[in-house]
Length: 313
Image 1 (tube, rainbow, N blue to C red):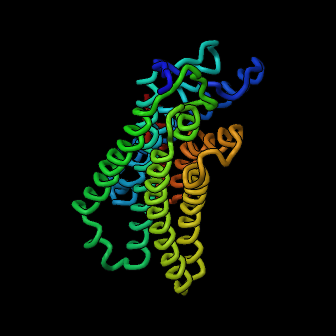
Image 2: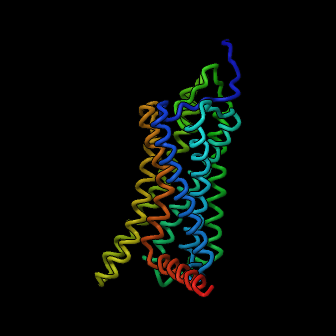
Image 3: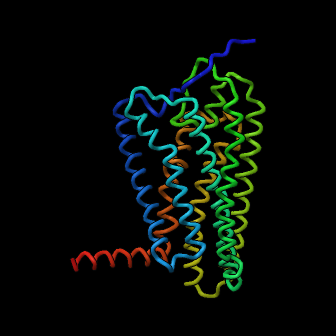
């Protein structure tokens, strides 16, 4: 038997102890966070206000935007606070709570991206049956199912990690409570926990990634059959932007979680984590919306309406 001291709080090491570097990072991440929130709120507002955007594709996009706001808010505000305070402390319960919402929202994003790819597959490959296939009831089932399944996905990893023993050394070499540094910090035997989390990550990420990839493969094959060069270019432009988001998100997530726990240096772990917790939530509104003609037209009409209303006043 060994003496195990209950850990009530963790200290987050973060990025750097250099004050000038911390100020630079704080400014950079704060600007990105504000732009992320504003961009995703604009998407939600425009899709809600314009009836022509009440199709399943834009409703899924609204779900994704709301998810991105929640996802980045789970990590970034606490990270910003730790860049300007000396005691970078998070309680044990706060750490597990942050980890749960991180896994829950991350898994939900995987499911939503797969569902959005399936929606595009139906719209491009079977346009005549799309309206009858993607009904309001079917859309609701897919959207709610993504959120509920994501919520359940987060329970098992958090439960297993919360039952591990953490000894007196409580320094987490990361900027938030993530799975690899917590497993590395534990003084318990983590073999079973690592195996279960690896299998769960493999199942979730691989199944969603394969479904998304197959959907876009069929879409690309259908695009090549379009006789008009303009039609091919227009359809492929939208799909290619979606593929960029999918490649960035799945690439970083798979490199982090479908691998042995200690295979990457901590600094590289942090850099990869920044991609999917800070950068991707900013890229999604840009790629999914600003390259979408229907959304840009709706946004332009709202802005013109506001300008006319202001000029009359």
